[in-house]
Figure 1: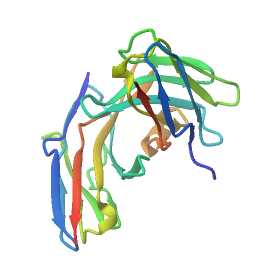
Figure 2: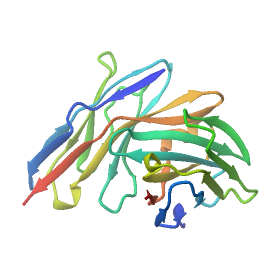
Figure 3: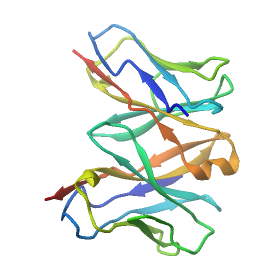
Length: 116
Length: 116
């Protein structure tokens, strides 16, 4: 079955602009999580959506937001971009429920965002 | 609260040799899982091996095995017969339940280089 698809792969934006990243999870998975990966901070949790509802949110400013559609596809949006937002943004898909988590999460290949 | 610590930022190993990557963790979960993920230059995080905390037997997946010491909160990854394709970043991770959902807590990672 198809894996987790993230688009676009690369993105260059200017400070102050906004950006939208997309993630299509594995078919049947209802949970989508987003992570930011930077050399300095490592992997940090942004938020998690399950059945169109945000269930959990990491410690990021309100400029970072997301949503999930009825087909489980998710988007994350970053407004008023700052240089420090340059990072690899990873999306992870899971069934989102209990014991199934023991099988881990399936990640996409990420979107590399560069803010100039 | 949950923390995952990887104390080896970089390691190298000769092809066909064995290498062990270290990970320690702290968790408030009563039952939990531990994962090792591999991130090659292609950027996609790939699940290498998983361990369920209530299982005493160490997990094994082909050339990959873990040494899980629950009392010491240690979860090391052993790679036998190292191959050039094993060159990657390796992350130790554990799901943490907070606010009604799960999020992965990652270590800072170990960059492994396999030398021909």
